[in-house]
Length: 465
Image 1 (cartoon, rainbow, N blue to C red):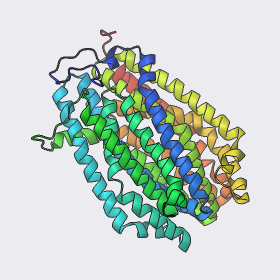
Image 2: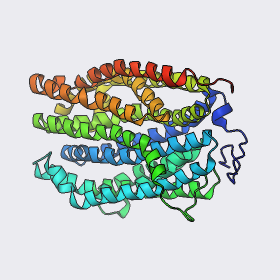
Image 3: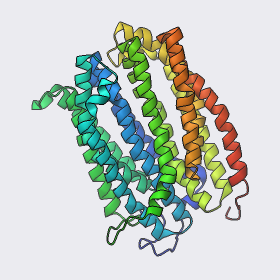
Image 4: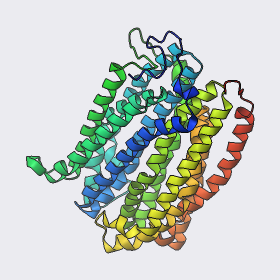
């Protein structure tokens, strides 16, 4: 079970890896669907979490939104490192360099541990200073500090869970990550109301209960993920006997991983600045932004799940010099992403009131939020193309290009537009910064997609078709 088409002893004898032979449409569906379901469940958790937090108070929802950039940053570091790890493992498997794939997988645990130490120290010493940058409201600050400290110090389980997930995905195993991700998310959904409101004899912990339920669920997901990774046989074999960190392997991982981290961390930085801009106008707008990001994740996360399936396919076939499969995977991924985003656009356009009502919206939230959801969703279909294209650059180890394009999309375009629109036109026009940025980014990304194709993909050998 779970041997992914390789000899379990990793003796270099390839049986027939599905990433090189299975029809692309079927392969992309089989590898993406578990990740899409898994990430959709994770996104649903964020919605449910905010649903319960909103019932504490609007200030509680604003406090969680202020800390959301820190949670995004933790996910950015863990997923970015995992993307670099997954890309390296997939390429080494495609090149038949099995021992190097094993060695790369072992490095993932070391990097996860180091990442956790950094965020734990922030949780102990840096939380109060961070929160005070954004809010002078005593209630919002107290709630935000309490929530941030718990999720930061307890993030060890998040880092190890995502490391296990990305290692398995690199081998083509998408089922196991779906299982332990869904298990953790469901536990989180169950524990949230119990610990927030003190149900079934549990202590009533308020916003701290939400943070604690998150950490417990991550521990459960990590435990199940490590069991599946280490107990079953896969295309990579992880062993720490005689393990020594290798600078070259770490550099190979972060050649893709570091730009990916920066790319995703840009979202954390961007949202922090957005919070800073909006809270000067009204704290209600911060709550609306928090609602948007959580509902938006229900649309975007399936596309990110699609990319998790596409990345190892593209990386493997690029390593195997199979142009047709690289191109076909990209085209099919773009088509599916556009379809998902089109559905999301319709939902935001037709049902904004219903969406806001889920979060116990006040009249001010309705007034600001309906307009915000209408405007922001204009850019969804453009974002679909950008997200899939950036995944191709990651799979081909173009980490720096990925980073630069993401920074152009989320910082160079978005933040100046956000400040200008808020400063001169107010909160009602602030939201146009999102679709305008997506349209500009699409134009630039199109140029680089064509350029990378002509330079690196067009002349790949097709002899294996």
